[in-house]
Length: 315
Image 1 (cartoon, one colour):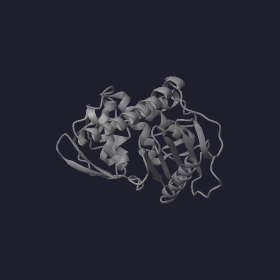
Image 2 (cartoon, one colour; image 1 turned 60 degrees about the vertical axis):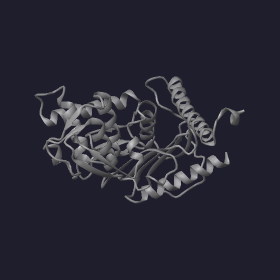
Image 3 (cartoon, helix red, strand yellow; image 1 turned 45 degrees about the horizontal axis):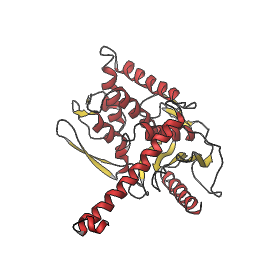
Image 4 (cartoon, one colour; image 1 turned 90 degrees about the vertical axis):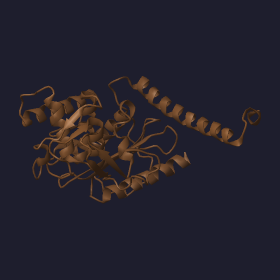
């Protein structure tokens, strides 16, 4: 009957392509809506802590693998131990920024923002659309970009405040958001995750909390980390300056069904990585690694991803 309906083979192929795309979208929407209904507005997933994988050697001090669809913990190592977060902090900074102001808001790069450790090639006075500077800052892990966002959005409500006061209020919002979504062991001292001193991190949290944060974003702001799927990206400021952002996660482009990722590294924190990948239609898996080495975090991630794929194939 289908062949009679279609006039040519091309239309028949298009029909099946659109049918497959529709089924994929339906499964993802079903997961998101089902999770929201089950959890309510302000809760995040929990599960019995048990490892479904055989013993493995990881360089990470803490790790957590969570199946968001079945709400099952697949692997846990020191998942409730509070550790420095480094640039995983930027995930919360971006979330607060997105909830504070629309994507089309304008962010002006202040000269003081460029004094932050790290040079991403931004220019003083350069103007950006909020969505674009967030994408750039998350992919490239730009400290000056994220500080510029915090200063610009904070100044909307505190026009006469000092930079220190503006940043302080923005970080307070980050901590209030952490409390709101029940990240009980997470605390932020700054918006970038840079170490405060040689022995004090800019933020602290657990592998379990970071997994919950990633899942929250998947459920309520799935576009926030979408750019982090890419190996690299080009961002254009409102002043027509073109900036390239290379993903700080070298596994981007190699992880099957990568949905989101964020790296972090400081001397205090070591190597951190949080990511979501969807190896099946509508089955997102959250992987968080804390306290590994700069290169070891990616090796650990690949080990956990491989173990996850093996587990899913056998069960």
